[in-house]
Image (cartoon, rainbow, N blue to C red; front, side):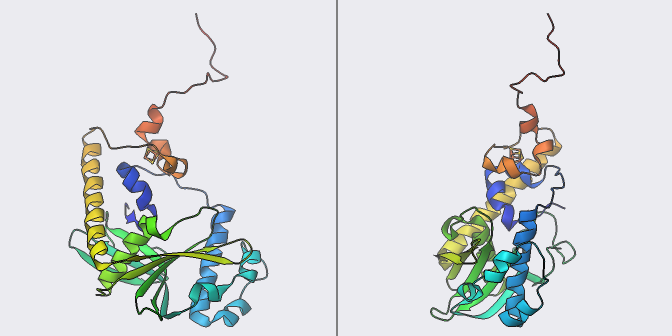
Length: 259
Ligand code: SF4
């Protein structure tokens, strides 16, 4: 199943064929497990309240040290109508956005999404009590610093949330970065309705580019492959014609010199 996942859009924009080339299953690292647990905890705080969520925590789990010190109110302050882990689908072919549900475990296919739909899950959707605007928050864990203003993931999610909810105002996007000591650093960006219309064209254009590359892939024509930092984490690397075509600079130990 080849969805255009919001979390992969930055890589797909750089290298459209990475959306459909065969992928290797990637190992689930300890850091990924830690990130998943922190997200799950924030989700439970929204569902149950922080005190109740803390009471149900297991004694040992990846990320426990961060969770024990996590300043949850920093993430949720000035927000109301809070919903968490909301899955969305943009059926670009028919130009309709849907809320697929909450906590669907990223099982977009089961929830009705089709190949090459743009899909994604929002960590938090809420209303800003001070401005009345819709707020879309991505909770980040890892070392990487991400800015809301440049996050293609947040741009796509903001568009899908606004469209699926029939909301026509500005959308506030926010990255809330959870640090190792439990503190939270947030950065913000507001997307106007006019900018949302431009983003719609941007992502529709991207989808068309992916489909054009897919047709070329099927007829063995050249693809718009582009190497970048994304290659380091790309699950397609083993099957990528560009990576495979790369000349090896070193002589393998088991290859003998010939005259
Ligand atoms: S390895 Fe790099 S060049 Fe190849 S598909 Fe992935 S992102 Fe593109």
